Amino acid sequence: MQKGLRSKLLLLTFCLFSSLLPASGSIFCPAVADERYEDYGKSSYNGISGQQGRKGRDGENQTVLANGSAVNLDLSGQDGEDGEDGRSGSRSRCPHQERNPNRDITAPHGVNGGNGGRGGDGGNGGNLTVYYTNLVDLQKILVRANPGDSGRGGRGGRGVAGCRCRRRSWEIETCTGTPGTDNYKCTKKRYRCYNGRDGSAGSAGSDGKKGKLGILSIVNSQQTLPEESPSISLPISELASKQLNLSKHKWNLRQGAASLLAPGSIIADEYREFEQRLETAFQLIWRERQPITSFGNQAVTVSLNDSKQVEVNFPEDVWVEGSSSSEADLTKFTVNHAILKKDVTRLAVSEFADAGENLNLKIVDLAAKSDVIETQFRVKFRVKDNNSGFFDYQTQYEGDIPAELITRDYNRFILALGKLKINRENLRPGVNVDIEVVATRSLGERSAKQTIKWQSAIRKPIKIQK
Image 1: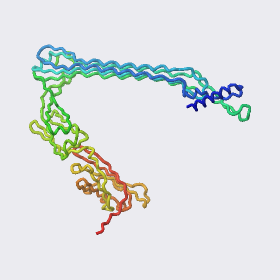
Image 2 (image 1 turned 30 degrees about the horizontal axis):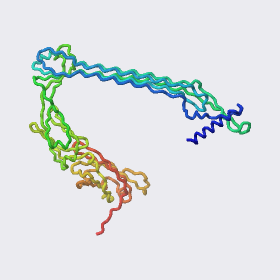
Image 3 (image 1 turned 60 degrees about the vertical axis):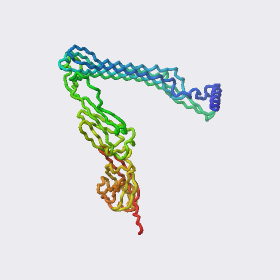
Image 4 (image 1 turned 135 degrees about the vertical axis):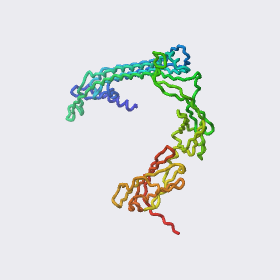
């Protein structure tokens, strides 16, 4: 650092000394102060974007008993708030332009205005549940479940103009050599100042969404419906030790809600009419040889649908093959086989052996699950024989491997490649091959593909001496 400062002082001293020379012998010295500039001045800051408007509050949900008394309810949702306007950018500082620097310069650019904030969504109208004995009693209930209007988007802030050059161009003379001698030469170069770019106005915020009308539900009963439990999620390890009780309310969808209520009522046209309560129990039967605890905390979701059928959804990481059975109000799901997804595609080449029609590729299942997983193989067989003048691999066969050419011995597969429709010249020892095997592994409704690649030269079979 001291060395750099010393060199700058020497340059400044030399330039001060040269200023005492006659004008005809002046030497151009780049000012030390100029080296810290690329442009003169400094751009300011973009405008701040406006805040998003808040969502309107939803109308309150209500439950009433229709007994012939007049009821007046306002369940309207609130309007969403408008988004804030974006702020204009700060004015750029446009200082006095440097005088004749030995470079092109650009004036400070203008800055952009902030974007307007999005308008808030309108609140939804509240839902109304009515218990009744006589449907005509609903005519005494006046309800307004209006949706809230959306908030408007804020306006974008104004952009700021860039600074302008006070002097657009200038010329500087640079001299080399010793004045009065033949090697003293001067050249002139013209430099320019470029105006700063103008900033852009911020974009206007979008309007929010209008809320939704409230929904009417009716129940032909004096007794309120008990709580329902239509879906339960538990770690798979806990399912085998307990029985789950599921319940669900089944509703029919009808049209003409406003016609059931007092004139002037405002509510969604489609309403729900209670049909019945569905109840059933669920039990998981575990017959997979691996203990259920080896599947950890993988969550399983059990749900009851409107057809009183139980749906069991296992996580993506767990593949299951099983069956379901029902009797009375109990559904049982029996897991016959289960495997973690990561163990489905653990195939690897174990041996590439023989030649000619006896050429085979042996693949092993490292997860040892091939007794329960269905496996299909597709192969692309390519060869490169330098002796024949081919230096790129040429495809000799591409397609599925017929089931009769696949032998499975527990977790080991033998693919009889030599029996595919491949020219025998391409199966002889010394031929370099590139093999790509795509294995499709399936269990139940799930499947995955694994690609296995192998390059090698076909070797002569080893003869065992007797």
